[in-house]
Amino acid sequence: MLGLNGSYHFYLRRNYTDLRKGFDSLSGIVRNEWNRNPMSGDIFIFFNRRRNQVKMLYWEGDGFSVYFKRLEKGTYEVPELRYQSDHAELTNESLMLILRGIKLCSIKRRIRYENVQN
Image (tube, rainbow, N blue to C red; front, side, top):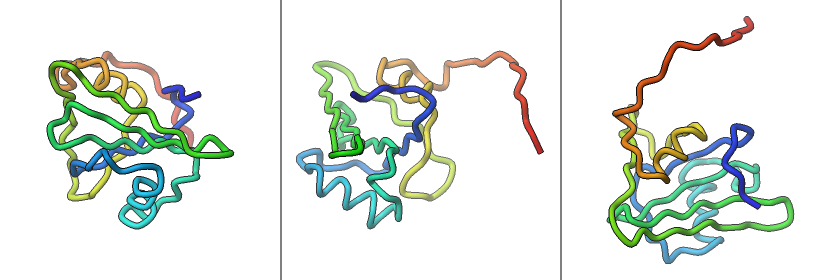
């Protein structure tokens, strides 16, 4: 079962995707356009043109699973990517905010200690 916790890497496709695509076509995008292994255990996120549907592709060790959601009203906010890449890595927190409809620009984070080892 798909869980959106910090142990996964989440990759978002910059361009819209025709969400009629299935397992093979989505894994082909990951492999051919992103040069990533779709069976890595990472979660790959795709939005349609209108941004009211999302598909997430995930390899579960013995096969692919897809999470698919269509909003009845409203749209998903897709973050602006800083670089001209065709995909970007997201944190699980950002993904949860996107899926819940919370504006990312309104989030203010408080300072926290980070243990950075050299």
